[in-house]
Image: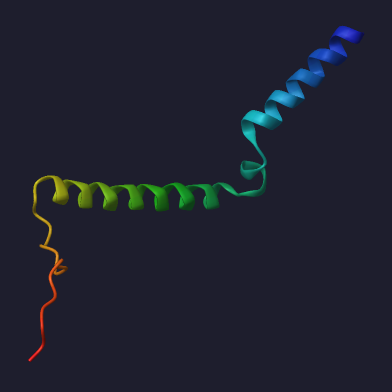
Length: 70
């Protein structure tokens, strides 16, 4: 009996630590929306990284020198 209780406690503890509570309070539609949002953000960041890598991004308008206005 003691072995079963210990195994049950280990199982409950491992499920709570690995699964977390986030998936229990979100519906499947909310989870899909969350993953689609993350995928969109990652796709945009990848595009920005590729632009920087291939030097296709716009040049910076910042300068280290003072430009006087006339």
